[in-house]
Image (cartoon, rainbow, N blue to C red; front, side):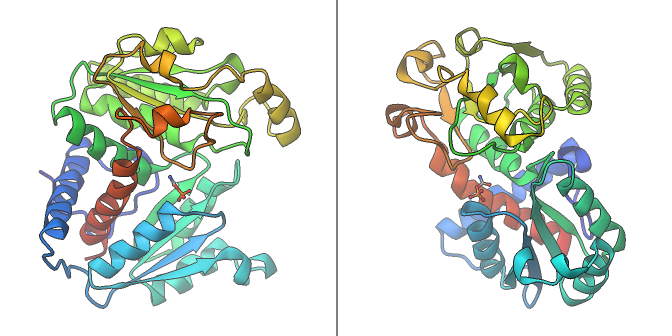
Length: 326
Ligand code: CP
């Protein structure tokens, strides 16, 4: 068990070693148990987290804010559009100045080709931990919550469990590719055989694919790419199907929307779920495009664990904040 995470950033999924992720999960399970028993957990009394948002959120904002309150501290909600960032405040200034006011800085910046660089630029100048609330490349806290949820449903030994990470059709907007990228990096470290299913235009970043292949090799798991949702779903233990944009293929949102339209059949429905194991779980980080990405019957059905995933965001984030900001 690695217990000294004080002062560390969490920007990419591999920033923490597997042992450090195990520590985070142990603490998260303990915090969840304590909350169920109404036990107090004031590990961050009088500490303050800055939550800087360049993009909207329901779960991330709520869970970080609630988590900081449960830890005895406070979270300050700051939207980029109400700051002076548009008028010239640089990442250096945010890192230097907010690093002096706050005990941690969490940032959501999903703009393609910009978000991850922004977080790393702030981190260079910040004296306190930088926590990634989602960027264009990674969504590490979503992935930790997903891992915690899978362990709750399937046990902590996940070797040889088949996890499908699938693209799904959506009409609302071109969603970042950060969730599938985080999943293919983290899950092989915990023994899962990952099958990535996506149409040809929805490739993930080549460098992330390379890193995922390395992780799978290192941890002795399978990592396969297919272009057929049905084929992927066969005998799966875990189905994680969500939409993402064609950003690698084209950064143009209009062109991307035209490409997406070709793949309306990529919906998770009852027929496809029946191809997976009978005890397979259905996962989605939310928000979902209902009856477009996934049918109501599946997302509200007995195999869906989406609300546990959303709850576990709070527990894993509180664990990381307690370990890094304490
Ligand atoms: N899953 C997730 O990050 O949700 P929000 O966009 O609502 O924060």
